[in-house]
Amino acid sequence: MSPPGARFGKCPSVGIYCDAGPGIGVGHLMRCLALAEELLSRGASVRVMAPTSGIEWIPALFGPVPLEEPPPDLVASAARFDALVLDSYLLPPAVSGELRRAGLPVLAIVDGTTRGQDADIFVDQNLGAEDVAVDLPPASTHLAGLRYALLRDDVRAHARPRPRRPLDGPPRVLCVFGGTDPYGAAPAVLRLAAGTGAPFDATVIAARPPLLAELESVTLAPGQTARVIPPVADLPALAAASDVVVTASGTSIWDMLHLGVPTALTWVVDHQRDGYTATVSRGLAAGLGHVREFGPEASRTLFRLLTDPSVRAALAGHGATAVDGQGRERVADALFAALRDGAAEPTPGSRTA
Figure 1 (cartoon, rainbow, N blue to C red):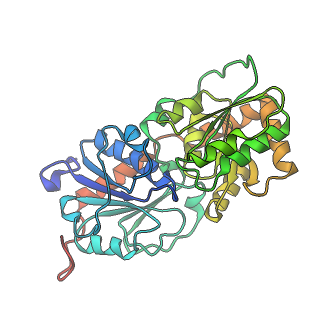
Figure 2 (figure 1 turned 180 degrees about the horizontal axis):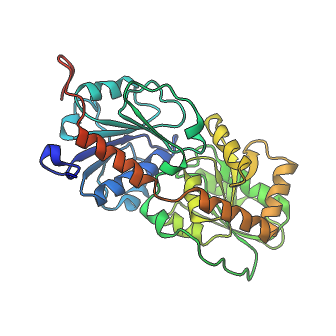
């Protein structure tokens, strides 16, 4: 078999365009980083284009992966790439079609709907996505389900199984709601945990400075402690060392399941609800409900998780078997196959950079 870049006489150059920002979060960026790491490991040249201003800790996490601000016109700047990966709710769907008509293979990472995009490959890494009928463009490939979950190097490096540490104190709890926590979920969850009365030793990520004062104002019960910290680059290590993680039903849940950490979920925006319901109903995580509607059942659920080791062990075992960590290899295989087979020749009269 010829190497992936054979049709170009070199290793392929891949551009990855994704959403990010204080009001959007960094979920798109994190899964794109995972794919970028895999492509780089295979010798490809990769550029990740994302608006990261205002998220100071991102450069440290990306390390050797080239990261730049997105160009004002993606199609006009696409000539430097052999293929494009798009992971955006904001990019006009027509852009994907323009790129394909210019002869570039396009891989689109989506969540449920394709948004009318035109791509050679659609990747939907969400639980149950393989069971949902999706209207695809002709000749497109659909890679769907947790088999295609995109996990970063640092997540895979800390995956269990390994023996759980015996508790020599209250359970260590990590509360994290993405890189920006745009909806202020962390204070609501800390108040919920405090209200259970169960002992815990919590680390809470204050993703934005305004959340710090609100978190520090939460009154804790005897036996409860909470340490508030800013976002950290080594989050997987912190999660792997925890006995319980509380987070939102977004892309990071697949990281937590692969790490084998017992996890409690909430949902904060409508598009997270289906994923939340699917994950909780399959017994992969404990469900707390909507972040603005915590009630007695959420308190009881979290209390059981904090006080019953058997509940934590069951969740950890189910989650770790659901995400095998090889999704990025499968996605990269499909992209390199598209590069070997060749994209369509540019349509006469189509826009080329």
